[in-house]
Image (cartoon, rainbow, N blue to C red):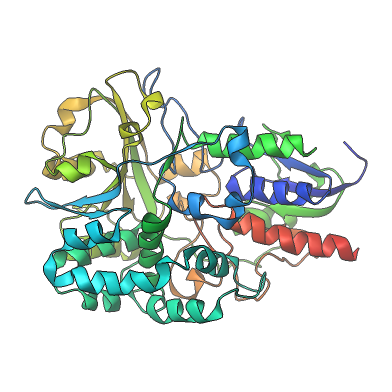
Length: 472
């Protein structure tokens, strides 16, 4: 290791890995330090239940990763990353045995909503479909890391996306479209009436139509491993099992980049209460299942989908989100996001068996057990589900926070995605990756454009870092 590195990155989640790669690609000397025994953060794969069953402890389906300008600019396929696309990106079953779907085809999606809303849905998404690559680059690069390439489309998207999703839902006359869209918004655990929640739902819908909602062959660890392998080829070094408690634990460097929560960064760097107003959001309770066969969904569409949303209607979804966000008890009928990777990836489980995960939203730091409520919900839409369970691994907020320190209170978004913090995080600043120390930067999903496995906070922060390095 050189006596003085150009950059040290702390935290080997997707954003820390991306920041390190972007800096190494530009010729800077980089060392990456990770507290756990493997790289990955929210993109890991482990045998959590039984031998041969490969589970993703956190993120499993990747609509934002496959669309990410950061990842699309890197040769990750050369290092083993392969995207697998299920027949349907997502399905949302209803208690009557039917389902609405989010398909690669706008027409198939619109038809699943019924004739009264098919036209409204087409009118909503069509203006953005052919400009998706430019649009996603523009809004995922904001704030001032790049000038918009298509400011007109970005402004049009803002007019639709900045109001609450409850406003956008008024475009639809029937409950099927409203329910599916409410479920899309709920992926970031934000109340449906929140600022910019329309944009959240619209981003997930457009991602499905343009590039799909794939899984990584072999599990989400493949994303992290590809980034780490590329970093090593570029000359960067990766140090695991290395917990950083203060800046003095790190080697000398011209810049330090933290893929951590703002709370952890303030503690390590001695920033006191600099991030004291940063808010963390609801937690999740997650169950990974080893199954003796596929999930017995009543709706045939759900059997073909990689992701299945569970919520009877938009009112039930809204109530579940409010309970997790504003109350101290978990919802009786939790909204569930479920992913079934083995419908498209046979490497994830022994022949004839399946892996499956589900999570529901719970209050921040909640210490209860949501297993029974989650399985009651699953049985509503997949009768006989419990009979397929070979083993389960449960993780509530305390376990998730112990597994990944960025998930404060079980908040897998590393900060509430609500109010102005949806866009301006971790502080109200035009330079969100900067900190009180000119050589210290933050690149976690607590910075724009926010949560998800897409590497854009790391990509954007790397720009700020190399600009500083070139000035010094």
